[in-house]
Image 1 (spheres, helix red, strand yellow):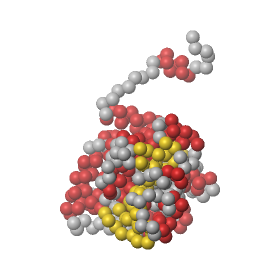
Image 2 (tube, helix red, strand yellow):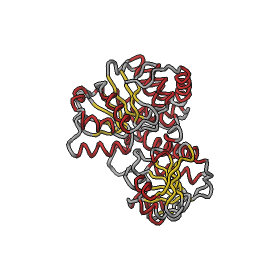
Image 3 (tube, one colour):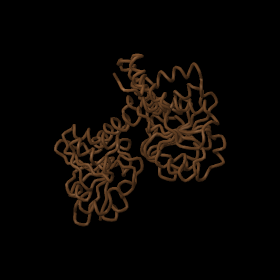
Image 4 (cartoon, one colour):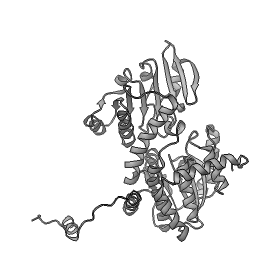
Length: 418
């Protein structure tokens, strides 16, 4: 199924220009693409990828095709697709099953279309592709040798599947690579979330009270960037150690039920549902802004918000105003979906360079390891993680020291130092 027949060639041309622009910021993926073009390690491998259809994803897809892969794409979020990029990819000969703003039924119809590619490898961002395959299309899994997962929420779902004995093929948790979550989740999510909220609202951050729910790597990045723009940041958590870390990083830490009476902007980044619930919304002040940076649109209880509201209207392209019974106005951004992609362009290409380099190299690894891995969730091999880090440093013209032979031997010894 192709939603883009490229009748509007100007759309495809615009997409190609933007893909090229992002590619300039992705030197590691470019180096891998050049090697793949010479070695074709993915020759004949069918890949079904459920990812955000962005300029960065396009560069990954083109690199995989250079490696000989047959790639089909669908979107991992109804509001993250960049239509010009999708049109450009179709023009490049890579099928895309996605269109921005698609409803839930169409979203899953596109996932099924990608699965009918009969993949050898799946690539997922949120595990919707994998869960759909496992629930309803297990016959299509006959040829699957493995998969990769891009994001925290997806890894959580997959580990639960593995724990329940339901996972039927090996999947590498790309999200857990150091060169992914320490950079993509922290710097990428931090910058792009603030970017999305700013584009949606044009608010001034300085002096605002910003409540960040969740102090994982994404929450850390969001809090740091909001603080850097002059906001007063409050952290809410359910885990003691991240809460302690947030306190020692200089943020106020308190329960959300208390913070909801103070906050001007609320940002969720937890991966869980109903983080902002009816009891919180009921206490928020007039003009409170709600945004989500977690993968699914469940972190803010939207049905509860709608039940409390006597009216709703869209006042900007990514802003819905809910007027409550007592006249207070609550503003929901991007329909509660990933705000960095619903209202902006997602993570900067430079940080996605490392994430997608991990994806490409892990797909090569899975191809080499065909039949040798049992169904489970695996970490990114250490050598791949380190290789991506070295390539990124080299692309930035940064050199580092190396251990001497004496130092290596010392670190490997157990005897008392002299």
